[in-house]
Image (cartoon, rainbow, N blue to C red; front, side, top):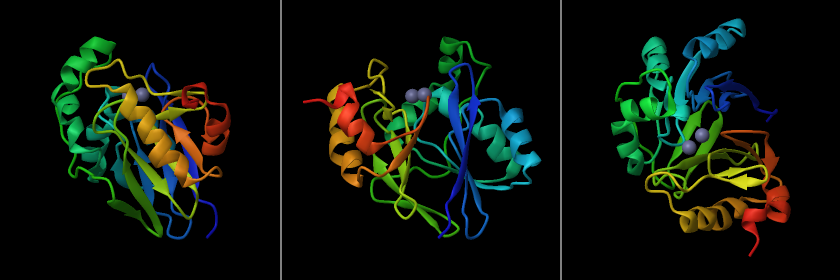
Length: 213
Ligand SMILES: [Zn+2]
Ligand SMILES: [Zn+2]
C-alpha cells in the first residue's frame, strides 16, 4: 500500500497537532484531536477538497477536543474515543475552558467510547486502539500497523512524556504504558504526538530521559 497521507494543523494556544489522515487506497479521511480553531481546520480541508468521515479523540483535555463537537455537527460525522475513564473530563469541559482561558466549550460526549483491543477502520486502514492511562485515565492511542504510524496524543513526545500533574494523572501508569505497550510496537514506528515534532519509538527508547531505568 502506498504511504498514508497525514498532515498536522497546529490549533489552540497550546499548538496542539490536529492530524488529518487520508487512506491512500480509498481517499477516506479522519481527523484526530481537533482541539480548537474549527474554522481554520475547515478551511484547510476545503482547500484540499477533503471530506471527513470520522473524528477520533485520544483523550478528554480541552486542547484536543475543543472543536470536535462543532465539526462533528457541521459535517454529520461520528466522534470516536477516547476510553470512558475520561468521561469526567468531558463533564468538566466548561471548567476546562475557563481554566485555560479558551472560548467556552459546552459539555458533550463522544458517540463511541473505545477500549483496549478495539480497532477503528478508515477505508483500508485499521487503527488499533491501545489504552495508555497516566496522562489522563482514559487516554488511548491509535496505531496503524501496516503504515507503522502511531498517533500518540499526550502520552509520549520527542524527548518527553505527558504531564501527570493534572487530575487523576499517574506517572507510574504512564511510564508503564509507554514501556509495555508502545515500545514493543517496534523501533521503526513513527509517532505523531499531540504537541511538537514527530519522532520514532526507537529514537525515544535510546534517548528519551524519562524512559531510562
Ligand atoms: Zn492532554
Ligand atoms: Zn495536549
